Length: 483
Image 1 (tube, rainbow, N blue to C red):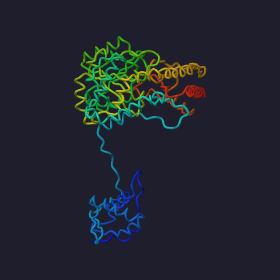
Image 2: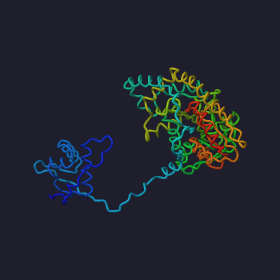
Image 3: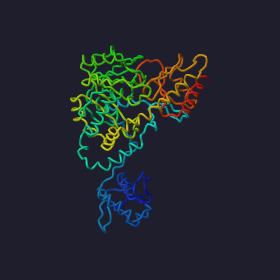
Image 4: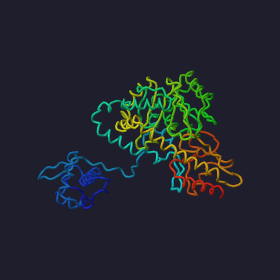
C-alpha cells in the first residue's frame, strides 16, 4: 500500500459545480477525476476523513457520502480503521491528445447538409416565417382538456400501448377531416405524430433509400427536402409556376412526391382541379405515393380552402397535418392519414424510434376536436389573421420605394401566415437582406427553399406581428431601398 505523490493532497480542490449537482456528487466527481488522471496510484491510502474534508472545504458527512458513492462504483475501498484506499489504476492522458472527428453516419452527414441557417442578430421588426402566434393558442380550452385528461390517464392504460395513438383521438380526427376537409378517412387510417417533420422522417425511412427517387416541388419546404435527402435518395425538383406543381414534369422513376397543393409552400398558390387530377393519374400510372402536406388548411382566412387531394385518391395519397401552429408549438400534435397497408408498416416500424405519440396531448386533442372547441377557436382567430394580412398588403401597396419601384407587387393568398413578395427587377435577395438588416428588419428569403436558379423573392410573416409593427416594418424596408 502506498501514499499519494508528494504534494498531491495540497493541490486537491473541487471541480467547478454543475447545474443541479449535489455537493456530495461534486466531491465524488472531483475525487474520481483525481484517480483517473493518475494523481493517485492504485493502492494509495487517502487521508483521514476529517483532514480530507477540511482540504476540500466540506463537512465530514458530505465526504462520507461521496466516498460511499465511489466505493459503490469500485474506485475506492473503505477498510474501517485501515482507512480508504484507491482500488483502480489511473491512466494519465498523453500530452497533446486531441479529440478526433465524430464517426458520423452517412445519414447524419446528409441531414446536417440539409439545415437552413437563420440570420443572427436582434431586429426591431422580425418578418421571418415560422414564428409562433400567441393569439392562435386556445389557452382556456386546451388547459381545461389537459387537466381533465390528466386526472383520467390511469383509467385508460390501453391508450398508452397503441403505436398509432389512442383510438378515441383517431376517431375524433377522422370525423373532423371528413367534415372540414372533404377527406375519406376511417380511424384505422390515422397515425398520430409529433408534427409534420416527424411524419416525413418516418415515411422517408420506410420508402426511400439510395438508388430511389423522390420528387419535390421547387421551391418547397426545406424540412421536407432535408428529410427525404437524408435517406440517400435522389431528389428530383419539379418547378412550380403560378398554378403550383406541374404534373407533366414529374419523373416516372419517382417512388413518391412531396406536395403542398392547398397552399403551395412557400409561393402560396393553390393547385387547380385539372392539375390535381393529373397528379393522381401520374401516381397511379407509375405506382407512386403522394405526400400531401396540408399545413395551411386551418389557417385559411379569406376563403374556404380547397378539399384535400386525399379525398380524390385515398389509396395513393398520404395526408400530413399538424396542430402545432394553432394549438401552440409546445403541443407537437400532428397526424398522417394513409392507406391501411402503409399504416400497418408504420405501426411496425415506429417502436424503433418513439414507441408512440404523447398520450396526454392526444387525449386532450380528442376533447378539443369532438367538443367543437377547436372549430369555435378557428372562427375567432381567422378575422385577426385576415386583418393583419390586409394591413401588410395595404402598407406594401402604399409604400413608394422610389421611381424605379413604385410599390411592392405582393401576392395575396387565402391561406397561410406569410406573404410571398417577388422582388423588383435589379434587386437581389442578398442585397435586400443586407439593406433590411441595417434598418433593423429581418425577413425570410426564397433561396433556401429552392435547389436552383429562381426569380428573387422574399417571404414576410405577418400573423405574429401587431398592425403597428407591420406598418413600421414596411416603412423601414422602404427606407432601406431608397437609401
